[in-house]
Each structure stands twice: as C-alpha cells, then as structure tokens.
Image (cartoon, rainbow, N blue to C red):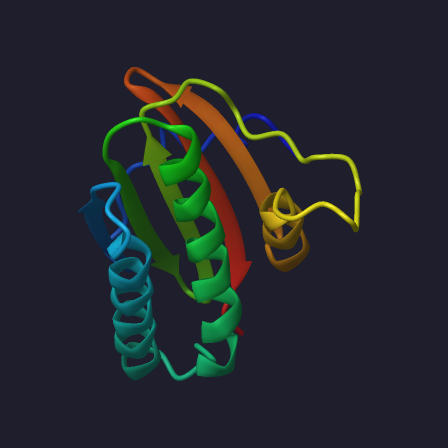
Length: 145
C-alpha cells in the first residue's frame, strides 16, 4: 500500500467536484449510517452524471464499511468519512484519531478477521494513508465507470 497520496493536498477546489462528508461515533450503528450515506451520495452522483454506474455501488459501500470498521476497531474516538467525485473517479477518505497507519496482515485463510485491507486494496485503484494532526486519513480511489 502506498503511504502518501501523489500530491493531492495542494490542489485547489474545483467546481465540478461532488463532495459530501459525515462524522461518526464509534457506536455499532455507525457503519450502517455510513453505508446509507454513501449509497445516497452515489444515487445523487448517478443523477448528476450518466457515466456513473450504480453497479459499482456495492463495491464502494464495501470499501467504506471496511475502512470505517477498521477506524472504529483501532482508533479511540470519532471518525469521519469524506466522499469526493470528480468525473467518474471517487476518492473516499476515512479519518480517525490513531496515528498508526494500516498494514495488510499476512495471508492466513484460517484467521477470522484481518482481511479487510486486502479487500479494500483489491477493489480500489489506489489506497494510501497519511498522518494528520489528529491521527490519520486513509484514502481509497475507485472508478465509478
């Protein structure tokens, strides 16, 4: 997994970006709310641009679920989800309060758990993490075409 994004921190805001963000606590219903939030965002994106394929919705929601579950499991306190769509490229970012960057676990089919990051990396074009003043942000980029 790449550790730093390729220079996206200094990009000026664009008017053609569809963006939404939400904050979540660590309560058990947070993942469900994040899935609903993401699905609503994707429906809005598909109405705005017919190149956006809702058939990708399941993969995107799975990536959101895995990243948010990791944030709630490994970081104390709240976490946040940001969705940014430029054309058909979706960048989804989960921020949390832990400075510990995610590391894929060695392959162990008998192990219960520890496979989420592998799933995210298989579904996303790029996955990277960066430290933030309050913890870290994990960003996955996916195509919705």
